[in-house]
Length: 49
Image (cartoon, rainbow, N blue to C red; front, top):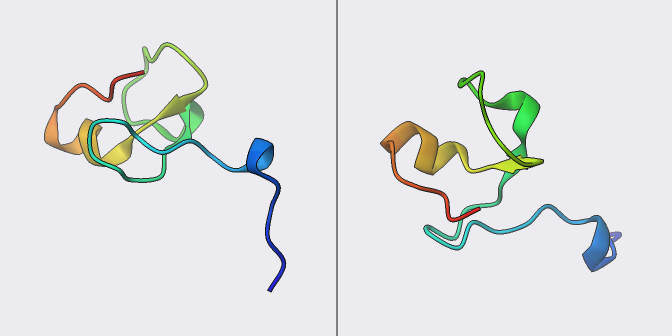
């Protein structure tokens, strides 16, 4: 199995520990930043980013 260098891995959400995804995948149209946490978005919790 090939591993990705750390700088190429998506960040981990500091609030819930789930891997974050690119903001373009967010259901919300107004998201600041490059990454969002879909788990926190679904639960309507702040994702800490």
